[in-house]
Image (cartoon, rainbow, N blue to C red; front, side):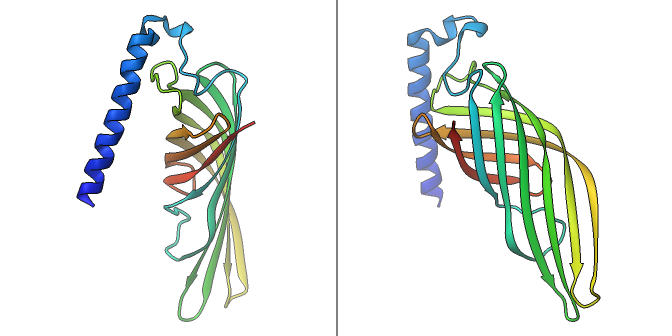
Length: 192
């Protein structure tokens, strides 16, 4: 595992060193901030992302039956700023000796994103940070007692992420932070 980590680190370092060397020779940093763009994000771009959360924060320790799954639509309002709407779904079940608790959670909200495309000269790499308000609706069902209840909480979503474009229309992404249901999300992005 240590050899794989070191090899991966060296490979990433070589790729970025080559890209930054190319950016310096092509004059990327010689342009003013307003006039430069790596091409990974721009105004009027439309992106749809779908992903899976790896660390479920649905509030109970149990077996994940579904998700958390996420969908996000983002639109570029400036060359480095986008606005998005997101939604997620998670179902978790916990068995006890005398009952089963099944919790269904639905999260949704809006976020503003800053993309570092004017600072990072790698056109396949889109690094971004985002934050915004949202809601999380939880529905708990207790099997033995035939009892259920729901509650709604206001959440503040904040994430950092990166996507790597394999083609102009397709990228893989990873996001870390808080969105109401997961701290780490992996998935794919499609440019519309």
